Length: 311
Image 1 (cartoon, helix red, strand yellow):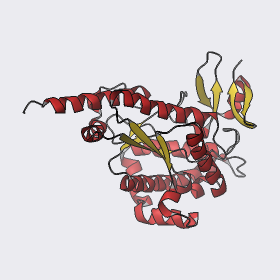
Image 2 (tube, helix red, strand yellow; image 1 turned 90 degrees about the vertical axis):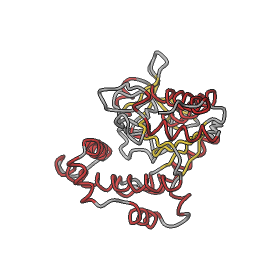
Image 3 (cartoon, rainbow, N blue to C red; image 1 turned 60 degrees about the vertical axis):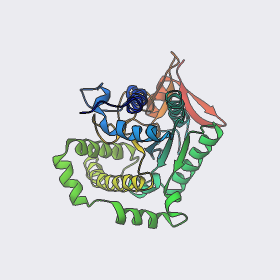
Image 4 (cartoon, one colour; image 1 turned 30 degrees about the horizontal axis):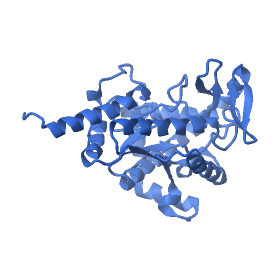
């Protein structure tokens, strides 16, 4: 094997340094973590492509869809301190990368609420309000290295039911294919179970039995997985060179790099399924609203509930 040239060595070194900034925030359920940089060849290769061209490293992050519809978990249907902290973290990650790679980095937040709003039973009006507020936070907080991307950027002003039908028809795998994958692939099975759990937890005031709710949510979980796969395929089509981040735990070496936005006791917890608690020691964590309310007092920002503060 020929020795690497000096420019190749520099590209490899910079790419490894960029990835090294991500590793402390890796969201994974893999018991072997932490892992060496060499365990992430897909990410290293994608980052190196940007470094080689002297271009900003572009990351795509599907997520920030809408708030959970369960008021026991969240403070309302608009972004709050959990989202503000998460956006700030992502922006700082980009500025840290800029110190290693002067062209810097950009993160495209691919807000996916409308993609599966019907199967998670959140009104499109609430999803619009959340997405608009998210864009407003990015602008208002001066987070110039972040941008938002959603179905409106792809399919304009079409009714949301038609938008969902379009991407489902064009990109979604069949339920049968997903069922087979859930039975044979550990990672898909873990994701299916995680989505099912969230759907159960996000359902408030269900009139039937717990077992009936669980059966319904297991069925709906396949719809969420279908739309999630469809959205991922559409993102890849629009941002083919980007490094793909994920808010879901990912195994070491996967094509997607799971990233933890804020501290939480559960690897699946996100700001849109919880409330933020400012601990007495100055650190932040995420937890269901009802638990946070027992531990701290409610803080409002601009007249809206924002987070809880532990005294």
